[in-house]
Image (cartoon, rainbow, N blue to C red):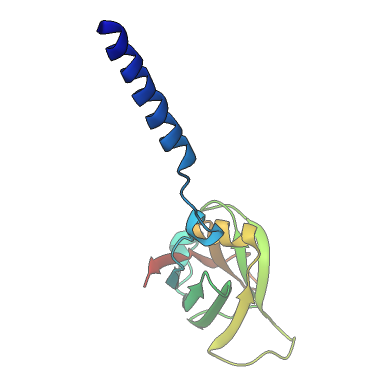
Length: 157
């Protein structure tokens, strides 16, 4: 009797195993890959003497938006109390000279008057640096290089 019980149990285990192995859940490629949410950000930079430890009374403000979907940074920049010769967007640690990302304004190149507006399409590396808070604006004048600067901050919409 114990021989038949063991033989029956073995048959049940084998049948259950075969049943489980034969069932296969069908997944499509779109189900397997989960796409992260696409975010948009409000971008701001308060640009003043605190970024450079100068004695300048000049200030500037950059306002803009960034979309992860289009990789487009759109900005508007206004300044006062300073005579800029060059306004640049740079990548680097706070207080450093940084690496040039884009010239926003160069004196004598026939650019528009205030407010300065424009857009930049970012590469994947530039996007990572922007989202990590490594970008800043530097305003250079004839007497100081830079006279005022400020870090870009992002706030998710």
